[in-house]
Length: 512
Image 1 (tube, rainbow, N blue to C red):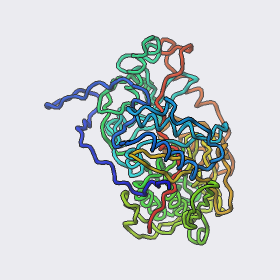
Image 2 (cartoon, one colour):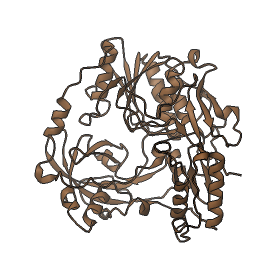
Image 3 (cartoon, one colour):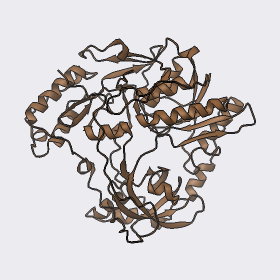
Image 4 (spheres, rainbow, N blue to C red):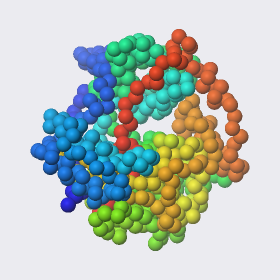
């Protein structure tokens, strides 16, 4: 019988680390500066496998196949594989062997399964609970057309965010004095690996970055510390005064994790007190997470008159799936805040959700808007709320998982398809925006002049999409590094695999 990933496998222990809050200079007052960020070793070498303890690879492989046959949405697609093959049989590297085994059991049908994944139980616990992570807190966008990295957002509680020396729109010119072009010319790959290690550090370290500042056009060198910090799932909540029909609420929401429920509750409370007439929900970088969190936010956008006796989501499981309780398959809109304990998923409070009763919600989206975020949009549409999408087509994941674990490894095969109260889903090609607007990385998120937010405000006022202009493209072209800083003939920059935890919908059941 498959072993279900328990709703609350205890939080990973917090690690106490020396955190240097200051960026832009060396240590002082007897504090030793962190070491230079180490080179990138490749995604496999970066997996933290603490907590993984496999007694028998043979037993584990048999369990994985049995679990897949019972729970996978497409069990008929599972290919025949030889479990004794060398790729799955390295006892010294059990996590690598079992990952390869799991991945080779996934559907080979082109485009069917892009999201099933495997990770460690420890990483899963930390993500959903909103625990500490180690890094610079800078999220980058790689533009293949210009061969440049641009700052997309900065975690407010990371060292880079606290110092304010890095901002959205800044363009990276060099890491520790080495440009991307120079790094790629190194035939040993050592230089490019050090470059990527400085861009995406995952240890306590320091990197020296040369940036073209978006605000001034000035080139500036800054030292950025990678430290332990807690990601903020709701970094910005703002009230935007509009001359037409009252206040507009702006809400940047990045992760459907447990720690998001409290700030989302507070945002809804603030919007309700201000009697907002419209809300702009920024999900462009929200890859998903817990359906429970999406349900609560969708419920708060509407009201009991529209959500009563209606389903936020309906889940359809595979043909071999063990019986699923009605309350787990069809989930009604929630009406009360719960604050689940991350260890047990038992509710710790019981408070009525503040509701806004909005007939319309603007949602800013892009290719990183995925899974639970798409389910939120689909759930609102299922009860007749007009959802106006501004931006680019979403990732296309009308599926989710429950999660299964063994020996410290967490397996997430696609397990169910998500539809709304009307039985509508099927957006595997993504949700198409009502107004197609390219992401504007030159303005801070929440700035009324930022392209997606500005488009929503224009649509609110006129009922039509704004005419697309070329000003952003012209500004991007003018800000490109000089030819000495880039080489169009070089291969694309290597990047680490984005954690699949960021692109998912998890159907864990909250216990009320």
